[in-house]
Amino acid sequence: MKILVVNAGSSSLKYQLLDMNDESVIAKGNCDRIGIDGHISHKTGDGRAFEADCNFPTHTEAFEKLVEVLTTGENKVIDSMAEVSAVGHRVVQGAEIFKETCLVNDEVINQIDALAELAPVHNHPHALALRACKDVLPEGTPQVAVFDTAFHSTMPRKAYLYGLPYECYEDLHVRKYGFHGTSHRFVTAELANVLGKDIKDMKIVSCHLGNGSSITAVDGGKSVDTSMGFTPLDGLIMGTRCGSVDPSAIDYIEKKMGFDPDQMTAYMNKQSGFLGLSGIGSDNRDITAAAEEGNDRAKIVGEIFCYQIKKFIGSYAAAMNGLDAVIFTGGIGENAGDIRARSCSNLDFIGLKIDEEANNVRGKLQKISTEDSRVQVWVVPTNEELLIARDTLALISK
Image 1 (cartoon, rainbow, N blue to C red):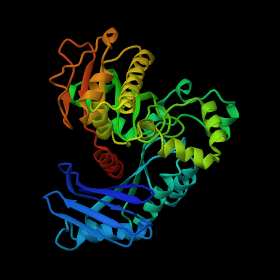
Image 2: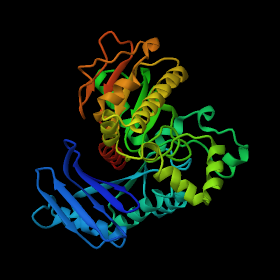
Image 3: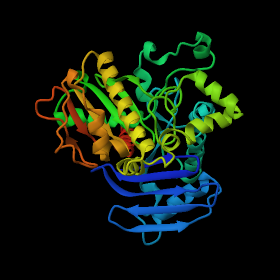
């Protein structure tokens, strides 16, 4: 059985076609610069590659090109889309409407689009991709939506409510939603499987660190708290996002800089974080290189980032009344050994010790704590596409 996984952004449409008999990747690629001009990059599981500039006015034309490269030419991998049993879509914001994976119909697409106000960069493009798929796929091909926020729907009220008047929650739906849920769910389940343990018996802190970063407390397989909030802007400093800031500081900056609310939001989301603090860039590799050369602003970025990670690990251990394992995943989490080591330093009070030699690993499943460490620390590569495919298969099999 073949499942197509789609992850739509405002100007992109990433995809993977998986053979669920062995969970292998048949092909993957990205249609980007949608609404600007257009470009597609496509790679097959056996190593063939294809790139081309295209005309992508909307997501529909991008999806049509995706179908074309999958089914025709030298780089095709299937004869027709009839071979695809279903399409699974990553959707960022499900709010309190969608608390689990669901089959897609017109009503679901409209509801996802209506939530765009809560995730303006993501949800409308998701709806566009869902409609584009419906127009292009053979009639009757099921589509499935997998929501990033669904994993965090198990958080208790004490974790997701803000100290604002209650009508802000009741009438405006302002609360902590959390994100990266698909990644956190995958890596925590993967670790439990590797250890041969029932995840219901485990307390895990999952650190998804990349250009966007979030940390989640997972108790018994359920999210009980997470660092991102009403939007992905909250929590840790990130590539271009500021993370948690006193709201009064935002109001002060907005007035002093003469920003309107949209400009202030863009300032916090696109010009802050690693980029804004360092003045160098948003990529952790560039920041690390500059710090090693003695750049003081680059050094403080790394110090702040690791300090914040450490605080979340400690606070979530307290929230769960214990800790069995810490996971590092995502582009930075899987590849930056120095970030992992610094984030886990001086955590002797919970019995956590890093093995320096084992920590010298990139993008590979590996235990990086010492044998006598009371808390295990692991690098677990994430695979959100595989989890979406598994969810899709499970739902259509019912």
